[in-house]
Image (tube, rainbow, N blue to C red):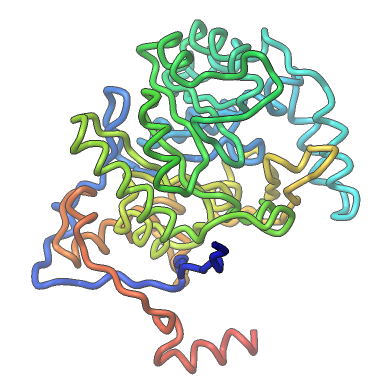
Length: 381
């Protein structure tokens, strides 16, 4: 019997609001920390594995501030002895020429000795080396990175599942990878689905990246038509995490990845159930980032179907300003950690796990209600 396909409602950051409750707390008592792989990080924000965001210098600087930066092992840092020359060329290109240039410079093969060298460089200078690779290169790069001192390996693709149909006789098996590089934790992504998240957790991975196509430099949603807005994706995957924890006693954190602009977005994702978040563009706009004020998606170099574009972010602030202030900006794009801390305090939550219990509502008017003068001013500007 034929059945008509139905559509569910799905919500992004601008569609929802956090509801303050009957209890508040002093922001100084709030600890929005993230514990992973035996370490506790003061900042529950990952810097994404993108060439315009993380290089060894950035990774070291961010580690010393208390955060996690992920180095892309498929990128420019492992293809060139001096990536700065290539980064200058990408930044100097016109927008129409930029994708073709990015495709060309990524044709240079990855060199295994540079994989080891970049990891060792981060560790030697006091950073915590988290590294990432696509599934097709993971079996090759993971042993090299682990031997060089990597403390976490991220398997990153547009969509990751535990079940994959392929002509390959032996593709990447996540459960085998987890055993091979143990005790180094493995994070996989990306997914947006309850069932896929449960199945990925069954493989033994230590973390899940959540989000398909929301990043400012990613065009997967336009090119492929796939994705779920980030609040709904976070709610669904958080449910899978909690049910898996109740059944097994093993807690596998979820990391909402992409689409963030403001401290309010960060707070909403964590309130919806994220243990941490991953962002790219805001970091690409820092003085410490390697992208010279530009940012491009990880799938931009793809020759058959590029799913990214170079965007101009500008160099707007330092890492310190972005994360902790001080700031004179009123749009929420700086002091992200301060905003999260204040949001949690307003809801009486002292930890991220407590913040997960805070009520949320569907509220599409949350950014426009009573804001006629602000909206008019933005239009004039």
